[in-house]
Image (cartoon, rainbow, N blue to C red; front, side, top):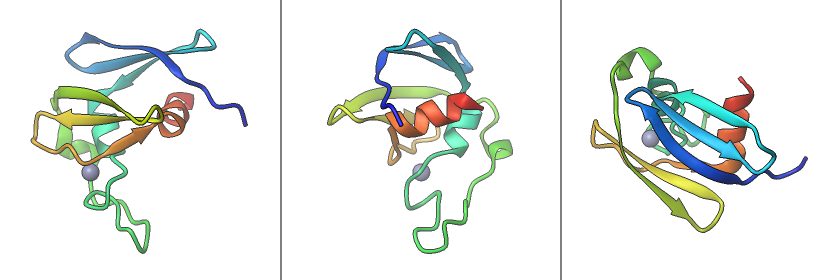
Length: 98
Ligand SMILES: [Zn+2]
C-alpha cells in the first residue's frame, strides 16, 4: 500500500479538519468523528481493542492544537483537554476513505 503524506492541514470551520494529501486529495474530517477515533490507550482498550468512547460524547468538540510528530503522525489536542492521541498519516488517510 502506498504511504500518503499530508501536504497541508487546516481548519476550514469550527467543526472540520481539512487534510490535503500529496496525491492531491483533500479530506474534510468532522472533529467529533475524529475525536471518537482517538487511538490512545485511554480511548481504546489496549488488550481487547474495544473502543471506550462514543462520537455522541463529543458533539461540538474543538481542536486546540495540531503538532507533527516524527514525520508520521499528528498529535491532536482537543478542547476537552485530551491530547494523548497520535493520529498517524495511515490512520487519517483511512478515516478519510470513509
Ligand atoms: Zn484518546
